[in-house]
Image 1: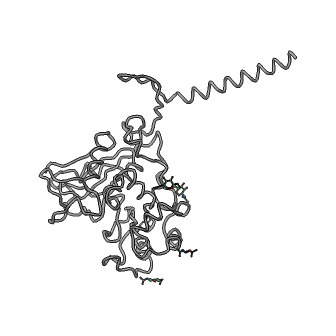
Image 2 (image 1 turned 90 degrees about the vertical axis):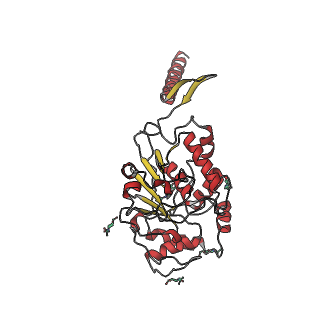
Image 3 (image 1 turned 180 degrees about the vertical axis):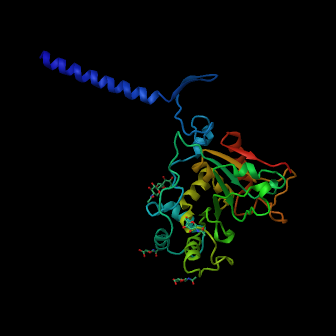
Length: 324
Ligand SMILES: *[C@@H]1O[C@H](CO)[C@@H](O)[C@H](O)[C@H]1NC(C)=O
Ligand SMILES: *[C@@H]1O[C@H](CO)[C@@H](O)[C@H](O)[C@H]1NC(C)=O
Ligand SMILES: *[C@@H]1O[C@H](CO)[C@@H](O)[C@H](O)[C@H]1NC(C)=O
Ligand SMILES: *[C@@H]1O[C@H](CO)[C@@H](O)[C@H](O)[C@H]1NC(C)=O
Ligand SMILES: *[C@@H]1O[C@H](CO)[C@@H](O)[C@H](O)[C@H]1NC(C)=O
């Protein structure tokens, strides 16, 4: 009997110690927080090595409600099967949708099939510049500041040649679709935004048969780009941005808006350049004379703009609006 009791006490002690150790481990990253009307422990896990991290929790309820770190960002061979509701929505955006399963099967023998950007953690501080194409970049002298970032993500045809002083010269990622594609240099990731299955077919063709020359309009049959750096945005990611961030406004999100949300998922700190109008309220691309409109019918520019401003108010991004 005594032996049994002693054994039991031994077990209880061991159990209690384990519980205490687990609790200590759990709360070691917590801080005691006092606010005006309440105080308590909030779990402040160290998210990254920057001074402010995009995903720091607890500081913006608005952001946490929208941000989903589980959504697949890029297509690969293991995540390519689409949820029925994503597939339905995505196919409604296109006419004559081809056989997605067949097309996707051709993708990953051709392009790298791996997990990207899953390296977030307390030791990483990845800074990103998202560079839009707004005329407010002209005369900004932002070039050196933009190039200073780890990632410089550009959008569609936004060129650098001749505009280096204001837009920089480095490009680590360029988000394009067939109708907006341009030649890239060898160190740049081509990130395809697939609005339709034909866009994926075009990507395959551009690196193989080069026989797709037409989507809803003429497109380049091929482009210069490093095949080993090609990435394809996941249709579920496009749907997520549409639902959670654009809140169903427009038909689908604009490239600029998608790119910005993509950056929130792969970077720890996001600086935004070349978005919005000039201070005179004029919308145009820095490399073109023609005026653009932010309400195109397809995209809800006004709403997207409000969300981008809110992201700035919530300290999730820092907008650089130029001077002109
Ligand atoms: C799609 O369906 C899944 C459940 O299968 C659900 O969790 C998800 O929220 C739905 N997504 C959309 C965009 O409706
Ligand atoms: C697409 O192709 C796959 C494999 O060839 C086939 O099993 C499937 O039935 C096709 N889907 C449609 C909608 O034609
Ligand atoms: C594909 O991406 C998913 C995340 O969406 C990841 O869990 C998986 O490991 C990736 N597969 C490969 C082959 O890298
Ligand atoms: C581009 O980079 C790849 C490695 O990613 C290399 O194999 C190839 O030779 C390079 N091409 C040029 C033209 O530098
Ligand atoms: C391009 O070539 C492939 C294989 O040679 C063929 O299956 C496909 O139908 C062609 N596409 C066009 C648009 O000509």
